[in-house]
Length: 304
Ligand code: GDP
Image (cartoon, rainbow, N blue to C red; front, side, top):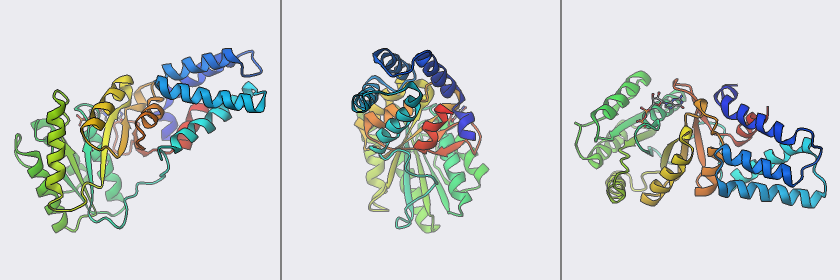
């Protein structure tokens, strides 16, 4: 239900356009496919992924010889869900962390303003709700506001946060946070990092160093590198994904602010293009407004 509400704009946009594209047509022909292509591109699915989807539908038309427009919804749903399966996007239905990794270390990356702090707060809340011990590490030491904002969330969720002064070494904060997490018998440690993109080499060096130093405490940390992207920025989110994946090994994605945008298709395109699973989507500013990304619910919400 929250998902439907959260994706209202994307849904209306997509559904209205699709309805128009098939109006007065009984079968899927070249014109319908052309219109569909345009709808997908303008929903920020991205050109490459759109072409993949169109090809899949063309293959279905070819195979069945005739495809009624009344079936297009169903086929499109199947093909998009199939595409997301290739990246394991939307396979989870709950907030889970592997039981054999304790503490489980989640490193969160992304540029300022995308909703990184909010996503960490929401995740901490979900994990805590499950009875897990959560520790936060404020390793975005570049801006004092970043540390303070994370502290607000830590207080709100009532989880401990490890911090140092602004300007201190991010790797040192991450090290302290992991040590503190181990000492406190934490289940999950979430490390915030600075995401300045003005210099790619700096970003790479910084993230590499944070990882290396964390591994002095927990050999295989981080277990997950979560890149947070602002879904409402459409193609900008693609660009950020490109830069971060070049700088470090990103293992999962969170796409935020899908509530305020008609660009929900970005979730499909980014996952496909970068072959990284989308794990979470942000659908509001509230503490509960983060969802485990489920591809069936997501795709269905566009067609309801
Ligand atoms: P950071 O700089 O990346 O840490 O970004 P913040 O977490 O401070 O978020 C920036 C702004 O985006 C804040 O006003 C948040 O409330 C807002 N925000 C974060 N996630 C979402 C979301 O899923 N939906 C909406 N509408 N706003 C969000």
